[in-house]
Length: 165
Length: 117
Image (tube, rainbow over all chains, first blue to last red):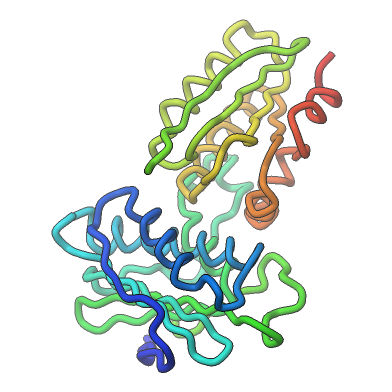
């Protein structure tokens, strides 16, 4: 697994939330507040908010296993045109990759896949880039959204990509 | 402040309507399942409208709940349609392919115009 470089650039926010269900909404709101005025608006801001909420929820449930005493760390950085959100838990390697992370609605409707399992799929499709790294117990998912002229012109579903998985 | 999911169920000319309010996440499971059972209880509704106009958050667990309702409805040969989704959640319905199986209308009136008897 490729390690995620610590993002350079200007730190916009750094905070932690307790690993309790519902705190993904707290992370979402604080990230939205941190990136206000950075040029990320409208549908692309909504996409980042959904990706942050899902990544934080994964960190709470699958990383820190809903133990409130273990925090999820969130760092928001602006590096040139890129808004980078790094979300770190203490669960070690747990993010599934490849086909296991690709839900199939027809199989779910046929009862051949469980109804759940949309989180990572949504994250990948919401952001411009996603990187995952594990360093001992530390597991980080890094989400990148580009602002300004470098932002994708056509925000088509499936336009996100991932690195480092 | 978390907005707990609530559901109001009623019928319009033979079509069942579930008007959802609040957040559709894991905490909505019991509410959504009970609302669906109430909506089909008299056996006459062939179409169930899920109205999201007053929903301000849907997460991946909420998507899974909608998948479960859709699976039940399809097994019973019922149609599920959706109304009132924000553009962002409409996009999520497209990405997940829910919109391949759930016709999406801009608002409840448009859904009922098309589906009520």
